[in-house]
Image (cartoon, rainbow, N blue to C red; front, side):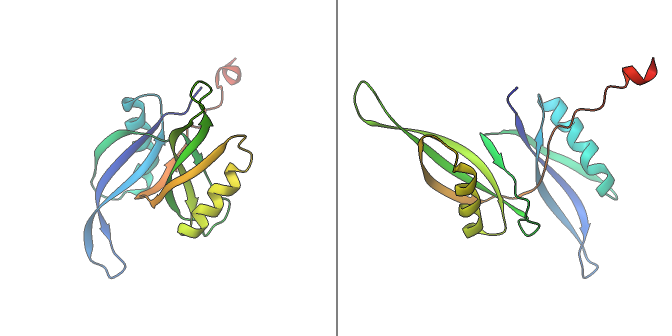
Length: 154
């Protein structure tokens, strides 16, 4: 099954390091099958971290073909890379490009390019990095299937 990603935004009052309270909006990425499931799962994930009132302000489909996570603890940002896969059109003999968006976890732009190249190393076709930019995404929430409780209840 193909992963469907939803970009969810939340607004809340955050206590800053200097003690002041500031209204902030944060963006998260949620793996879900529908908008309804995305909102439900998003709320389940963020509620333990929220004290006080908060509001989900936006949910939209994210056009993400792949997601490359990093095991490096310093890689705390998400970058969107627009990658063009290059193929040769057999009829015309011309070059054809197919663009896809890939999210890459990294600490800065240079590391994002390195992580992208490392993850693309096994790609059979040619590709070209069209652009890379930092996203406002704070974290991602993948779908994790719950254990089957039916066998325990028998």
